[in-house]
Image (cartoon, rainbow over all chains, first blue to last red; front, side, top):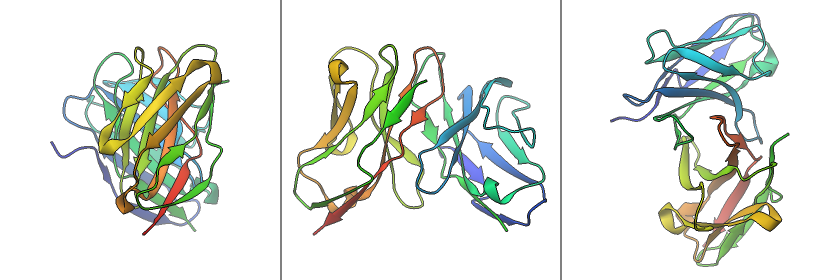
Length: 114
Length: 113
């Protein structure tokens, strides 16, 4: 098992462009989470999936953000019309089970909006 | 609302010295409690977790944490710090019956030889 994989690791984009990040969770992990981490802060919860169902979305997730997990395996996070305030590290995590269990994190995708 | 406070933004210790990183949480009941470590360029790694039972929890890399309900605290300790422990440490809570982690702002640990 190679752990949680996120691509790309770094993304620089111009303001107003759309970006998409991918997360491949650990095999057979049914839960997948997205977090955002800005400089000097801890990660903030964005959304999570159980299998293909998106069960919770944070109020941080504006209309410009959308996440999918179409087949209950990998997930994508898209940001439309990026703004400079979107610059952050986007972290993905996965876990297995039906209760609070250990979440394994990927190395993240660092987004810079210029 | 649930929250996590890590009062120390930055701590510096000498290699071999003992370490205690503070964490306080705000929640109406006993949440699930976690400590994660983040090294530069690495993902968050779970050090230890508390769900119930013994309030002194042992984790990886020689770390332990003690849950104190009366103080709403979950402080992380290590008796002898190694240079490789230099990293950012995050305390997190998961309110009962939810899946999201609420993180503190982190404590950056610097270790001098």
